[in-house]
Length: 117
Picture: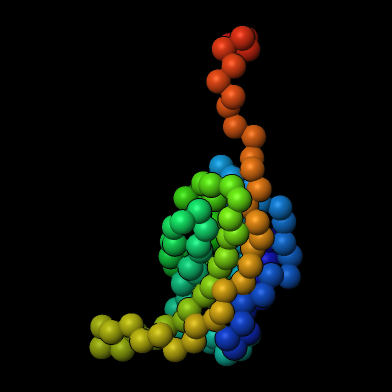
């Protein structure tokens, strides 16, 4: 999955189906020149929770809590900040990009007739 971040817009340019219960879905970010010199934080929201992820590089993993429940939508936004005198000043926030509907993922049914693995 890839997100393009221009001045104030985050846009999905390489999407994929997302399912509830997923862990380890990686998101790649590409930034325009407007973002030079800023520290970046991705803000993921879905399943009734919102989680911030500091972007130490060009990609990160969607927090699993955001994909815990099916039926809703997952979104991501990014903000850039510059730290001055110990104060973080937000200088460039995006609107949220729609990652899509969180589809129901298969999970254990509780069927005790299955052989043990």
